[in-house]
Length: 423
Image (cartoon, rainbow, N blue to C red; front, top):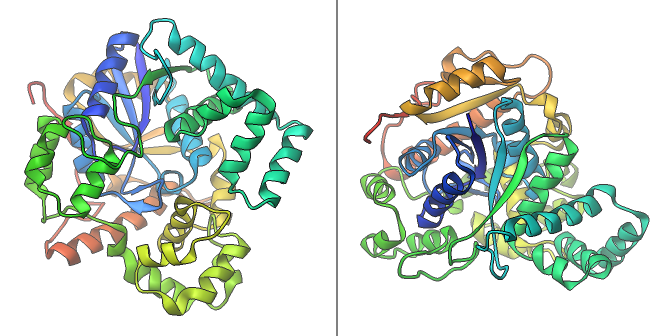
């Protein structure tokens, strides 16, 4: 049994993702593909445009065999935490052979010998970031002192130590994640093998709608700007388009500003900057900015733009604000950031053909598969990621019910997605 893992957001699923799944299965001769997917919140510090069960259904109808949930504490975090959470879940299944991820912007990436060469470069960068030699630390501090963001300072240090070619690699979003995946594999001493696959045409942050292969960013922006949904059809696999049209203006789309009241309430009720500093990703400098500017708060996106921290990108600020909204604390992450803390993972859905895979996982895994939340018993010692994610899901449900005036199942009532053969 050959099992390949993928870590993804699918926000929303598009033809590039479909290509990735098909190319993964073809190149690696995979019997099964397991996807660890973000739930209702993503790394940019935003809610997903459509709920996690709809996105799991999209993935399963377009090539995935099993979809597991990446807990909200990891899915809303920086690349390092996001990668660590996803890799740790795949590793603890004890059945995954390879981790396949998309990569960007390198010439001749589809050549048969290219993935191995690329992985070597990713490994070189990962080893530098893991070992953090003194000369690297000095260059990093120098960059931060000059006002660079953390990402820019890392890129600058990599360029001065390894050269421009390596710095160019980590200037792209998916390549940064690739390096973090390999770092995580090294750190937890996993036997899973890293396998890069070229992205199809559109880059991760490309905002333009193309004729057939547009990025998730471009598709989200088009929906946000009330682009004609019918005009997006060529960019989406047929099952995905059908799901989006079926749920359009009923449970989708959801945006950051739909959470404005929740965030604004947290900011107004905060006693001081020290209280905000307790939330994950909120530095003391950022907490002070939030307190000083909170009386000008009009909405989530407006406030994110208003803060505009010099040495932080919008994603960093967005993540900090989302952690405040969801109540994710630094102390929780300090306890969670280790492989042993992952004791259970939520199953979002599977294909019927994957039953042999599920049986294999149940026999070999060091992590419990949760298929029915009502039967789940929370951890008694320390923060429970399943319950923390459930609380975040209740907020997402509340937003959808209010925005679209619909009744929705609670996380305890929601059934997992099972795709029969032929669907």
